[in-house]
Image (cartoon, rainbow, N blue to C red; front, side):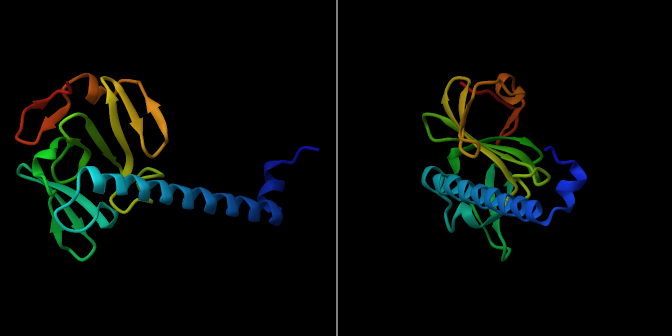
Length: 166
């Protein structure tokens, strides 16, 4: 017996199950984002506070500023770790960090399913494994497809000009 879309929409038991699945998926995504932000705190710590509480990121001159809900802001403990961005300084789409051996990229998009659930609009956090291989902390997968930013020079160095990955 197959059910029609109308039967699925009107069946209270199916609706309850779908709501429970949605709640589980949302809870899982929040947990994954929390773990990913904890990794940010370890690799690229803020001077004060945690990436967990950041509401937005802004690039001010050559510095990354993290803003909290109470309006206070802070920078990175090691400002040199922030190296580049994509998009505008006021509303960056991508933030690129380097810990001396590899890059880490934060993708921001408040309009995506993931981004609108994360306090800072984080869509994804990807850690460079080697060359063009990146690991998505949020998706839990290796990403080998070249993004336009990674294949060219669409990153803007924090001091201006192009930034290319090595």
